[in-house]
Image 1 (cartoon, helix red, strand yellow):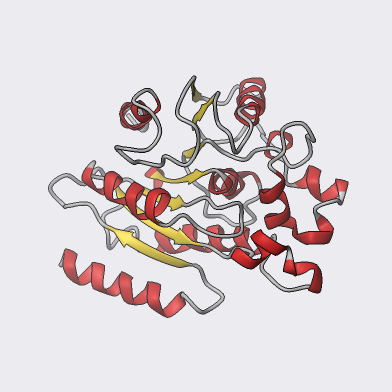
Image 2 (cartoon, one colour):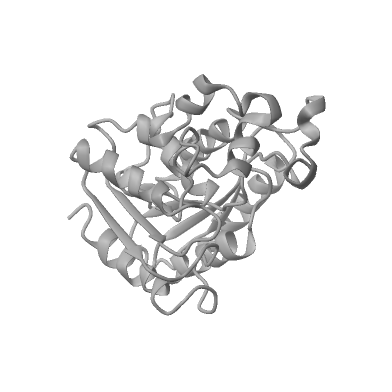
Length: 272
C-alpha cells in the first residue's frame, strides 16, 4: 500500500513539473517509524536556482530516516541565467509571488493527502534553507489560504530584504526581479521581520556567525521579532559552519552539524 502511494505521488510530481503547480517529490517514512508528521522542504538558491542535492534530497532522506514524511518542493525561481546575468531586465523569469503560490499549493496538497498517508494535519510544517528559509517563513507570514504550517524551520535563512547592511542582494533580486528589487515598498513587504504576528507557529531557527553568504544578523532580526511577539521558538547560533551544509555529514563543521539532533529533540516536544 505504501509503495502504491509513493508511485501515485511520484506521478503527481512529474505531472506538475511543467505546469503552474509546484512539483512535490515525496519521501514517505516507513509505517513502523512514522511519527505522523510531514515536512515540506524548500531548498535554497537565492530564488534563482535550487540546491536539490544537499538542501532537498539530502534533507528529505534524513527526515525520512527519522520517521518524518518529507516532501521536497521544486518551486519557481528566476533560473540560473537570471542569477548570473540579470536577464530579467527584459521581463523574463519567475518572481514573487510565484514561489509563494507554490508553497501555498504544496501545503494544500499535503493537507489533502494527509488522511491517506496517515499524516496528522496538526503536525505539518515547512523547513527551508537560505532563500528557502525565507520562503518557509512566508508560508505563514504571507499565506493567503486556510492551509497553514504548524511549525517552521528556517535554516541559515534570508530574512530581511530592506536592511542594506544585512540584505542578501542576490536573493532580493531573485525574489523581486531586476526593477522591483529597488522598490522600498516591495522590500518592506517581503522583509520577514516586519510581518511576524502573535499567531505565528513555533519556529526552529539555526545559523552560523561565520556564514559568508547570508549575514548572520538576518537570523538575529528574526529571533528579535519572534521574541517581541512571544512566539515559542528555539534559536541556535553556531560560531562555525558557514552556509549551505543542509543535512550533510561532511559539509559545514562538527559544531553546526549538531542542528539535526537539536531539531529532532525540538520537534519531539511539539504536540505532546
